[in-house]
Image (cartoon, rainbow, N blue to C red; front, side, top):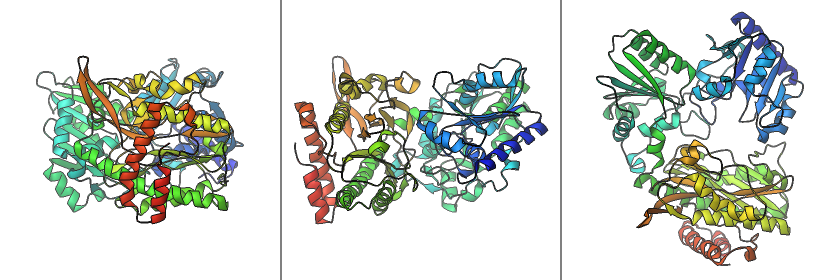
Length: 614
């Protein structure tokens, strides 16, 4: 889609305008969403990219009869400016002074008013509320009866149809039946004789609940579906062609029926008749507007139906890993660590030859991971940023942009994989040769932050907002900071980014979630020196009980990731004795765990040297 001419995208925008006239709409909003709020979109729902030519992962387009605009954040300003050139689509730089939000822009552009449309299944309630809360009453907002891209996108891809597979209970630790019971127990109590009905649309929550995996979403082992949970039954709405005989028999044993992907609509229609009896419908906050409106109509049609939008009960349940999940994650880290050692040793040998680029090393690392038992795929696109590219936080190299690695400076490598028992996410910043004093200082400040979060001991219930200071304190004293979060949850052969908790300096709902025994989180502070280099060091941590005092239970972190941290850039004089002791002990663990997994004597020797005491 990105190799077309700007005039092709201009014509697509004009075709959408012609469609708007037929629908009696004055504007149309195209977000970066599918019906399930997926992090990575199936090709069918990459409509914003198809329309505008902008390939960034975050953005929202609005088209009126005279104007078109695209909003994106600072990660993509340069990319969007380049890709939108000549299309007639104006770039709106989110967060910059003078940039209007969508509501303000619509107010100014539509003048006397009009009607704004959107695709209901690809507009979450959360996004709807944030976009249109400021609109005046003279502008109407409604879901369009038709999806324009079904007409305009002549070769629009079909919905993916990959087969479902079982995630064994030996890795999950709980049966689907037990998880369904836990979901029911976590739902709000019914009022009087009401039946309860909860409709899930988040794909990772559905996969976790049913112990099923799929391949419909890039970098995530998920499948397109909805899941209806009532007090005594459950129904999976998905493409029946995905259900093998093994999966069908499994679902029957677990008490889960199967129906077509869109058959949840019949549930809403049946509720509208009033023949079902008193029912409370619970919809998650992530619900899309198509579903919300369908059940709102049911609630308006009869007094027997009550509707509530609630936080999904699944993320807090999923965040606390079972013992089986913890062991699976440890096994995944061992396999990943062995692949990383093989790669880093290879990298040391190859860089002086001058033949490797950011793209070629990505391919090599993926190939080495693929040799490990149970490898299922990457957990996100690899970020390989050499020198100045390392300062671009979410940089993704292409054949056209890839820098050639030289035997000097720093390489930032953020990567991860899915294995049949767990998911990994690791960042290492590697010295490719001589470094400046600033590079060594920044690297060591990031390392200090990483170590101090990893070795934190804290009362049970401490939040990510409170823990964040451990990672930033040292760099703040030197005048450095970073804009992204410090840590996010990690799934068990699920999404690599998993809520509900995060560690970051911003006060948000995710940073106010209390930590509990069994929660995973990444530890990934960084510093990015614009146009020169970037440093990030990341491991996955597991919160565990660490005794009790008169002040209550305490938790600490187990570092799950096993891979050497490059010692060559370390400015030892900036580390405390406790930080040095932690680093040496970590490397002792890494060496003991990974040496038995390496068959090549050269890899073994490299690991011994890379984990020496400092």
